[in-house]
Image 1 (cartoon, rainbow, N blue to C red):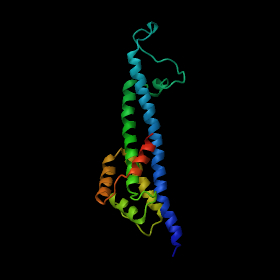
Image 2: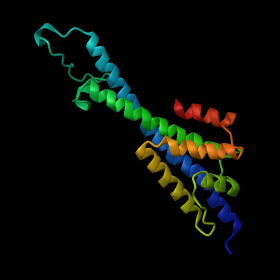
Image 3: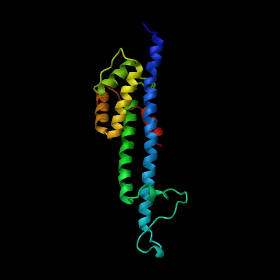
Length: 187
């Protein structure tokens, strides 16, 4: 039989590693969303300006000066419509990432930043997954990150919300600590 302290130590890492994985996505998604938002604003600002006389009817952006939005025409050769589409896509992906993070926080009911065996079991049940008690703790993390990756890739908020609803049905809630952590990550 294995040393219970080493098993517990490995189990303790599931929350922190899962949360770190989600936060990496949130950070990438925030950057993508900010870039799309900046360029969309830049294209809108361009519509408000009169084009210089030497350019006739067509408006073309100035060469990059290192200011925000100046490489938008290269990033979005389809212009404002392409920026608008990317803005919508990046906003949806960021929303999924943040909701997944909220879900991960809610599953830690006592806010100790560790999934207890009961919390992990409830988390898996909320996702209609089974916990293999003989499997290594790493397999729990792998299962959770694979599910998160699928949600992220497909922008599937429905499954996330269904899982969170199942946790709520078991008495889990968004705590003051969870809200503070979400606010910190959203900045």
